[in-house]
Image (tube, rainbow, N blue to C red; front, side, top):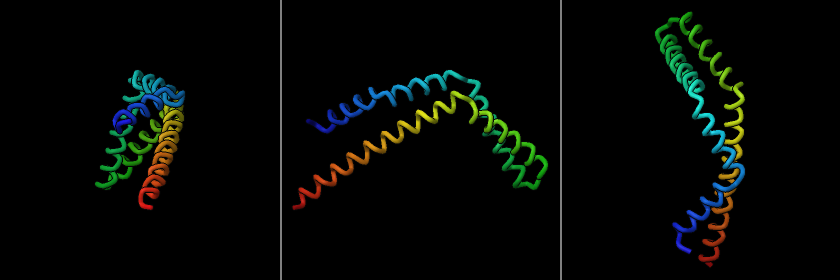
Length: 116
């Protein structure tokens, strides 16, 4: 079987797994929720401001913006959709690491056998 065809077959098989389907569904829901992305952008902007304030020695402004950014971050982390996304992402990452490790082991065995 040609390499490209094998890769496509593997991709199709992986994309049909429940882990991956769940991740795709959660990812789509997350991207529909513009409020979460707006909060994330606000948090990033405040983090940048806090760093700037720290660099120029405005300690009170640093504390205020840093605390505001931390408050948003805590809110994002406690959002159920974000939590579901990261759980699904971890499951898919674990799956991909497992598949990659299996492929690597099998390739190494084949290479060792070819050298003999």
